[in-house]
Length: 85
Image (cartoon, rainbow, N blue to C red; front, side):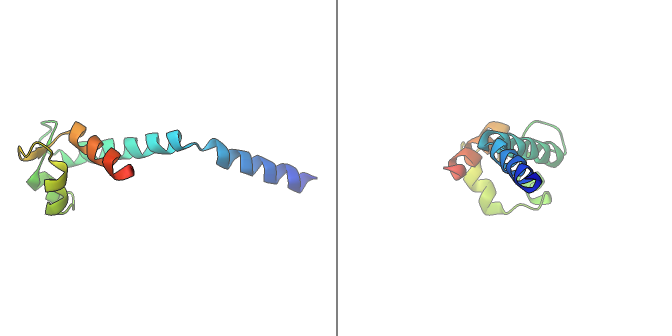
């Protein structure tokens, strides 16, 4: 009986970890990465900051939607949402 109670408790904990909670965690990690990579603290990532954070040039070009040479948080969120579909 104790085993069943423990198993059901663990199953409930796994189910409670909803996709929304996981998405919020991923969003928090992305925000943290962005803040850390934005070394000049202008609210956007230049290609140099992007590469210094260990990212590839190709990814920068794909995310920079308006092709202004910088990635804003909105562009990064939009790219992540597009990739998640």
